[in-house]
Amino acid sequence: MTAPGGSASDGLDRPFNNLLRRLNARDFALIAPHLAREQAAAGDLLYNPGDDVETVHFPCGPTLASYLVPNEDGRDVETILVGREGAVGGIVSLGYLPAYTRIMVKFGGPLVRLHVGKLDAAKTTSATLRNVFARYADCMLAQMFQSTACNAIHSIEQRTAKWIISAMERTDGDNAVPLTHEQLATLLGVGRSYASRVIQTFKLEGVLETRRGSILVRDREALQKRACLCNESVKNHFEEVLRGVYPAECGPSH
Image (cartoon, helix red, strand yellow):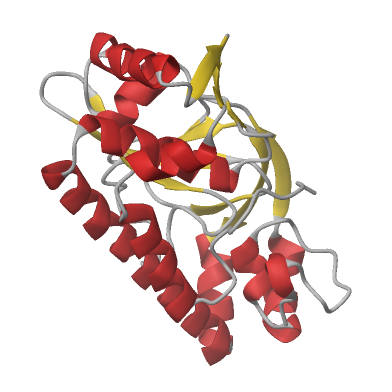
């Protein structure tokens, strides 16, 4: 059972990952002995294209992982961010299949690892656990669909505002996002100079300011008005499929 805000209400010592806290006590007990907790640093590589997928990684608290698709010009284009609402690697497959994308830690913090074999054994044992992960896979697919549409039809300015808000919702800063111009450019799939021009425009409008290695949002309402509605579409789908899993506000990490 999960209490409001994604916190577990069964007294079990669960990591601060909303997907894990969504599991009932019996299902969580099936995988709890096999969870390994660690600290991840920004830039840590989880998978390269072609790697065997042997581990599921659950970002906790403010930790963010990102999917990057390598391109022929040598650039990686970021597709989606995954925070404490989910997991990366071996969610649907039986594991040991080659990874298609590069998966990296975007913002460092707590991370929980689970061998895919242990997860698959638990899925075989419990239909309810299998159902939760199938529902999450549907939500992740919706994120990817929405990201594709967003890149095709929305302006760089709209997408910039969207990515900053998306990062804020999953991290614990007081309107501060540890995002550099270079990282933002990767998220947008544009050159660093273009991303810097957009940030400069937002600074002149009083929407945000920059600090070394981070962006500080001064007017969240104004930033929201400049963003497309892609985040809202994804959140609405999460609420329909896995209520309470997608982070609504910033919260403490444990």
